[in-house]
Length: 121
Image (cartoon, rainbow, N blue to C red; front, side, top):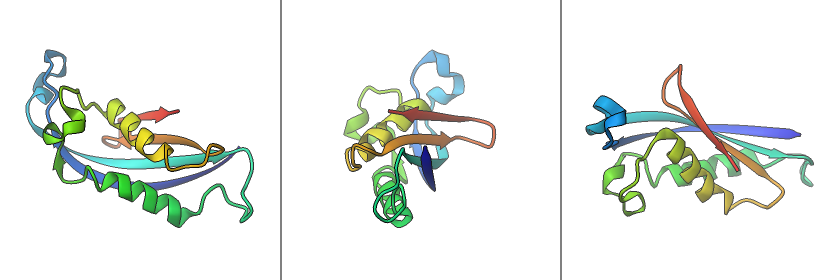
């Protein structure tokens, strides 16, 4: 299996209005470092999984729709707990529709140097 990973970041604001989230129920900010790992059993005609420039632009395009936004004000997230896990899946879904079927994708959001969450479809 071949893999290529690109990285970007986004800064968002949101709240998690459920008692299980303690102080995070209130509005707060988060800065995520986001890794997109592309995988394939075979290399393409250029001997790559995906062009790194294309992968970087794809990730940046998705993150730019969320960056510096209050997620509580975005219609896609009405009545949704925008946890790190949920956001990983959301980004994955937006990106995967732009990829050929033979490329796998794993999205990892790093909340800090000690905590992260991933989604792999």
